[in-house]
Length: 167
Image (cartoon, rainbow, N blue to C red; front, side, top):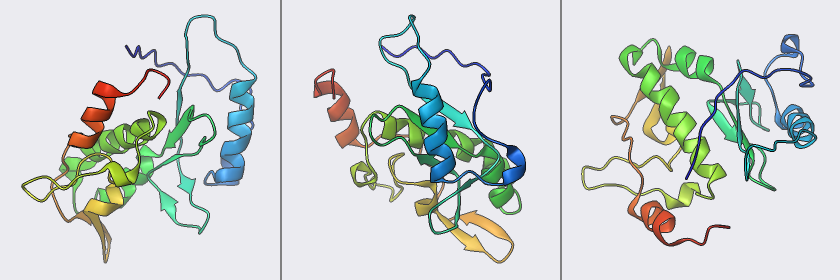
């Protein structure tokens, strides 16, 4: 069972918003700060950071990232980046794309990978595929190449049905 207890907790995080988009080095510092905290209320913890912007190693802006790959405890999403990229051509789907990105990164924390994505009968890609895989850059903003599918691949469903609890 998964219990979600969202809350705002920015105390002591080593980040200054004036420094711009978060990169892997910034996120590593956040992982270190998080690991030094204890919780008596949960068997395992997973944290999601909602940030203004994220940057890949190559300088590209990201919608989200699974950055704690050692223990798969944390991921970050940048809802404002998703909004900024898609508001011109896909304004009615911005909230869906933000949720899709959150679910995609959450799946990484549950040991699912991009390769676990499936193309369904109607041609659309499941949640394991990054949002960029269903998008294309237009002259002024981004647009979707297909309607977002909010579904898991059959492979992921089988994984959750059959995997040992430690997996």
